[in-house]
Image (cartoon, one colour):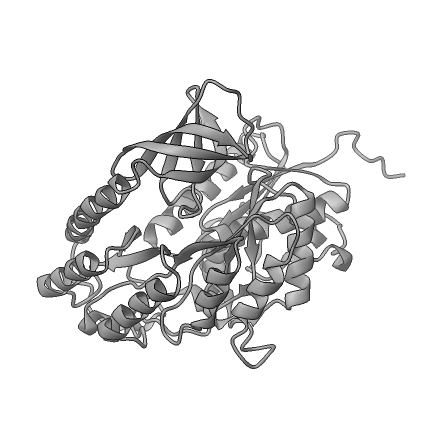
Length: 438
C-alpha cells in the first residue's frame, strides 16, 4: 500500500519580464489553488518545495536574468532545499531544445501556451469554469487585464511573435466578466495589456473593436480607472480617443511605443509608419483628448543608426513633448529579420546614445512637472514607504511612471483616492499636500 507523505507540496512561482507574464503566473496560481495545491508568488520565506520559473526571452538582459534565476533554483535543488524546478514562459518557448541539454536538472520545460501540461505535472485538472480567475500578485487595488495573446506584426527587431504566436483576441463578454470579478476583489484600476492593443478584435470580429471593448468595460460598476498599454501607431483606431474623452473612468493616458523617429530607422524596423504620420497622429490625439498623457518607448542603437538618426529622434522629442519616455538599447535577436543586419555598435555606444536621448527627455519631464505646481490632482495611494505615502495620478502607470509623494498627518488607506495639491516638482516625481480624502 502506497503511503502519502504528510507534508503537502508548496509551489512558489517566480515571474520575470513583463506584466503579460505576471498575468500568466496569476492564472497558473488560480488553477493550482483551485486544485487544493498551496501556491505562493515570489516567496521570500523559502518554505516551499517546488518552484515554477516563468521566464522572459525578450532581450539579452532579460534572457540573462532568466537563466541566472533558473541556475539559482537548481543550486537550491542540489542542496536539497527544493524537490522540483519547472520552467515556463518565453525563454522556455524559444530555447527549450537548447536549454534542455544545458540544464538537465530542470524537471520539465513548458512553452507559453502550455498551462494544461504544467497542471498535469501536479496531477491537477485544468478547470475551464475558472477562465479569467486569478490569484492576484499585485496590491488589491489594481490589476492587469490581458485582452489578447500574440502578435501579427513583423517588426524587424522583435522576437515576440516567435514566442507568443499569432494574435488571438479574447471575447468582449469574457473580458467584462473578468473585470467584474476583479472589482469584486477590490480592484479599482485595470491596465489593459496585449502585445498590440489596437489590433484587438480583427481576428474574431473582423474589425478593430477596442472602442467597443472600452465602452463595455467602462460600464463595469466600481471600476474607477481603465488604462491603455501598448498601442501600435500604424492604423491607430481614432475612435478610441472619442471613447477616452467621453468616459470618465478611462484614464487620459496611452502607452504607444514608437521605437524611433528617423524615417530611415522606422523603415529598417518595419514599423509601417513614417515620422510625419506619427506627428499627425500625436497632434490628433491631443486635439481629440485635451490633456492626454502620451507615454512612448524607444530603441537606441539599431543596426545602421547614425548620429543624424539620433539627432532626429531628439528633435522629435522636443517637438512633440512626450509626457513619459522609456528607452531600450537594441538587442540582436536571432530569427528576427534585423538579425541579418550587422550589429556594429558596442553595448557601451548604445547605452551612451540612450543616455543622451533620456537627458533630452529629462528636461521635458521636469518642465511638464513644474507646470503642475499649484494644481489639485486626484491621486490613487499605492503604498507607504519610509513613513510617507506614495501614489499616482491618472497620468501615471505602475512602476514605469511618475509617483506623487503625499504629505499628510492623517492616516490614509492604501488603494483609496485622495485630492492632492501639488507643491513641488522633480524630474520624474511630484510632491503635494492632501486637501481631501475621497
